[in-house]
Image 1 (cartoon, helix red, strand yellow):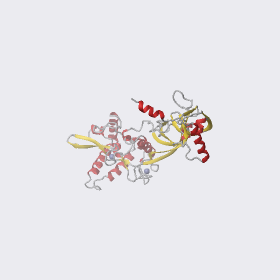
Image 2 (cartoon, rainbow, N blue to C red):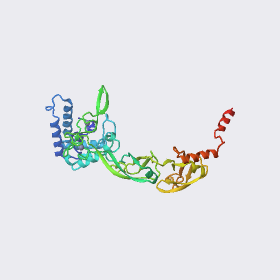
Image 3 (cartoon, rainbow, N blue to C red):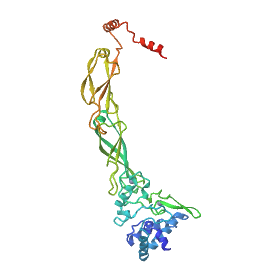
Image 4 (cartoon, helix red, strand yellow):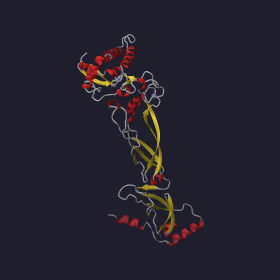
Length: 395
Ligand SMILES: [Zn+2]
Ligand SMILES: [Zn+2]
């Protein structure tokens, strides 16, 4: 055992105790681990034997007050209890000191655990093990969808959004261990989640620890709710204001309504993709509303004043001049969509009314007589005459 070896090993982690653990705690942890991994109970199991050796080596140092003092001083010089392993990637620390320093004993470290594990579920997962637990961290952004009515999209609306996100299992606070128990530091990787695999010769590479699948913890007695995964689902309902004038497919950002931050970090944002339901009458083109209105032949020919509905307001009277063709668009100012952004914010778009001249499908005898009289009165003019003129003269 040389000092260089000491610098590279975290004996406290190996024993699963805090670095300020009492001698009695260290002894207790050592006895339990040595018993669990004793070669007599695992004949031929090389991994157990390795663990047993590692535990014995660790206890040989930190179980001896003089050696422990020396070891602590050396470790402080080489950068404390962070990772100092030439073979492991830098920054791959998994700081169990937070966990076990609370109250000194393993059974009262629950607060530390939930704090620690909170980090695993915050932002996209996966990389949690490579973070230290001391930094405040901004909460994750959350995306969701909301379907709102057409009229609500014009006026704005407050909606209740039910958000489902990954969260620590409520029954075990995310530890994955049955109530009253705690996971222990993985003895194979000493809580790092990675281990150095020998590829042959002088080459080594890091691989995810197979014993804990990279978690750094092993659970002896799994939580029945989450089956040891520590994962749960959080449901919460928040109310969100969808601004007036929102378009179908538009993404609204609600600042600070995302996942909660950790260790005093700010919350993330919530992005709501808004789906706007179709209206049976009104359509939308930019900031204008559109409406198709049927108009009878006589109204179009003779002119008329017709009443048209507006969205969420009183009907307006529209003057159809004599001789209005099918498909003409009339503009009713200020009855469209309120502009909430851009240069003309605060103003309102228009209602565009398209007239659709109707041809009666069925005529009674009196009406048919009248239409015949109309034909006679307008007889002689051929609407299609210049179609043929033009087709002959086309070069
Ligand atoms: Zn492991
Ligand atoms: Zn659980």
